[in-house]
Length: 74
Image (cartoon, one colour):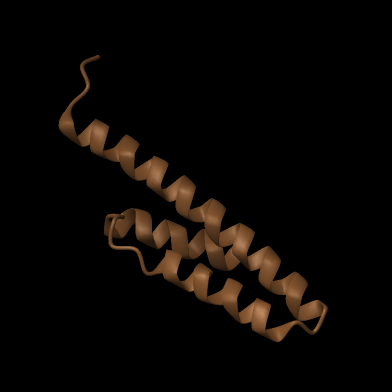
């Protein structure tokens, strides 16, 4: 099976999705941990980083939708 441009693009999108999801999950965990410790400034820093990752323009709409769904439902 020959690789087409769309297959390569899809593989790149999957990789970007995995990287973004890793950052979102990590920052979400740290944010919750800081909130539990009443460290609100640190929690807001993690929330800001998480939201910046969700604001990506790299992902195609299909993959961005998957990122949002996976981020909200874990």
